Image (cartoon, rainbow, N blue to C red; front, side):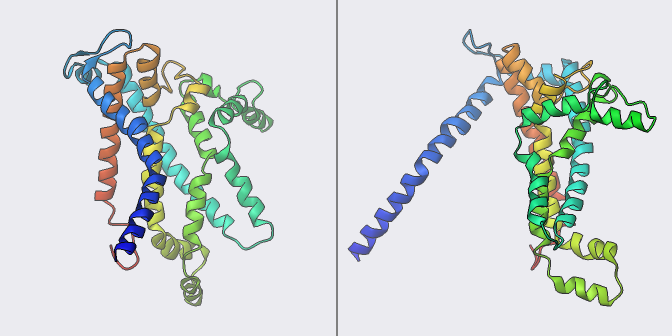
Length: 297
């Protein structure tokens, strides 16, 4: 009995040893900075001088006196509200196409996934050239058909649609998740629907979508969380311009904290974003009755 306990303790210690570095990493590089930023959110701190506690002043200034904050918030909501549904719809369609049993399907799946593993900075630079109003590929194609292309990133009305277009290019992760869900749908359901005379559209509408609704829900939740944190594409392609037309929440947070060294103000912005995302996530779970789980919840 003692031998068994000693062996079990030794196995447990080995397991704890393997996870120790990860736990320490989470504590020092995640939890530690979170606690520190929570304190700094209530301080006036510029890195050079010691933090000075000022209570809720940062939060009051952000919510009631900062017009650029509200511009960044509205731009971010616009980006999330348009890009997330479009990405879901596009990823679902691509997953259906990639779920077909044809020769070379592995190559097609790799091609569609490649943009996801490409560096975000490199992708943003490429799309800056693609959307160039003078020699960009998109405007060249439009001009070929006699259509005057917009200035895209140089036009306040078209800059955010251009950013959203880039976001649609990187749906590989969502495609893979949808594809895994599609491959778990029992083929017997489709066969029964075909006997009843259902076509391809009705089969996907009444069988596929309800059965993979948890996949839709997962991609929706993760998509909203990630979209609220969009930064690299905007920073590289427009730097928030023109005329603050594409300044988004995280970019404004970055400028306040690391350009103007208003670390307390930036920390307050970070915690406001945290509560926004948390509330939206809780609301999604609250109104998730449309999600079907086999065998009940």
